[in-house]
Image 1 (cartoon, rainbow, N blue to C red):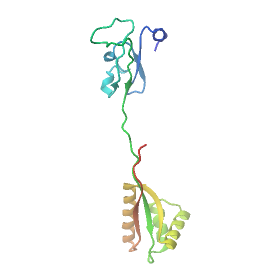
Image 2 (image 1 turned 120 degrees about the vertical axis):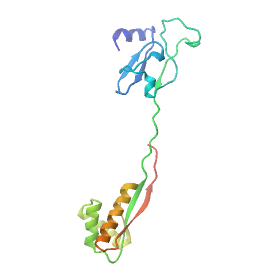
Image 3 (image 1 turned 180 degrees about the vertical axis):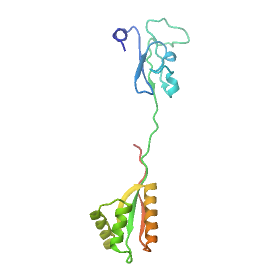
Image 4 (image 1 turned 90 degrees about the vertical axis):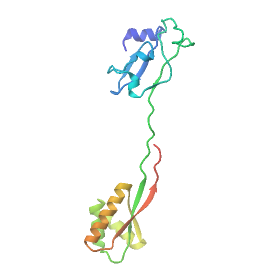
Length: 174
């Protein structure tokens, strides 16, 4: 916006509307809202912009049926954003069995879940003493993929090791 344009706005000679454009810049345009264009030269309505009301030059005379009855109306361009939800989270649990060697369980936790050796040993011992242990919280796709990997490797080495899925939290709005 140039200094003389700003001066006209401050003195009440005209009104301007700032419009968001795809490039993230705003363009200031006088006159009727139908003539307002973004910095790229495209009509603002082409980008899903909704106009709340009209704007007009205060120095122009009213045109019946076009400008409305009020003396000055200011146009606001808004874009409605869809509300996003966080993906549902699932806890992967390691189940204890009396046949799978402890070293194999630690190795699986390191290989599939990328846990450090100390953390893998802690998870394995917790499952051994209490019957099950939480490995981590993941999205549904990640959790099911990791469980399938554990099942495949355990069957390959002929061990009955099992992991199960438990719902941790639903998809809350951000």
